[in-house]
Image 1 (cartoon, rainbow, N blue to C red):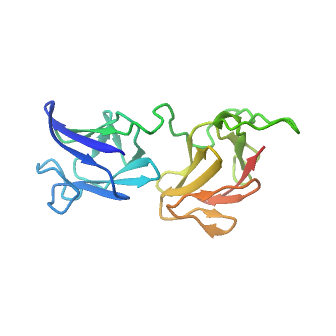
Image 2: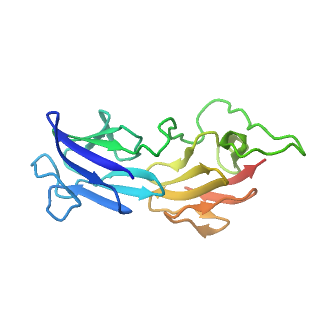
Image 3: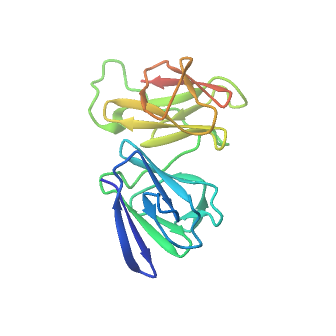
Amino acid sequence: MPKMIVSIDGVVIKEVQLTKDRTTLGRRPYNDIVIDNLAVSGEHAVLQMMANEVYLEDLNSTNGTYVNGKAVKKQLLQNNDTVEIGKYKIKYINEVANPGYEKTMIIKAGSIAPPPVRAEGAPATAELASVAAAIKVLSGAAAGREVPLVKVVTTIGKPGVAVAAITKRPHGFVVAHVEGANKPTLNGAAIGAEPVALKNGDLLELAGTQMQFVQA
């Protein structure tokens, strides 16, 4: 189970298990993690747990929220990440999660190699690496480009407008809405925070861009 270890000047002052889908952090006493310090806003940040993944989101705090020394608005936390709020350091521990993956934003400049395709009739294995899938962009400036889904989590969309996360699981891929007022759609139906399974040929629309999920 994920947990947060709060410390100041190297001294641990509390340890909090993340058991809820939404855990609030701030100076006010009604927060789940209370840090009574003037550098901390009343409602400073929120931790959102989806499956076994935890996203940290800054709630427009006065002094900002930092992860490993970098200011963040919303970020997927990795095992051993250090969240910094004022003089406080909050270490994120999630030993079940895969510490080796990172988020990838879609549609970057430069060529992207197409995903490997399994030969017709070849046996499929249970390994994650054997699942070949990609997102094919159908509209916009990047139309025709394919983005291989080689990471455990691939984020697509435009930060601040609409962002979705596609997660690789042992039995396939799922998609969920991460941030932005405009929810993405899957085959015309809005996607929420709950992960939805993807099938070959599914049509996604996100921030005005149409995409297709392609699985070998």
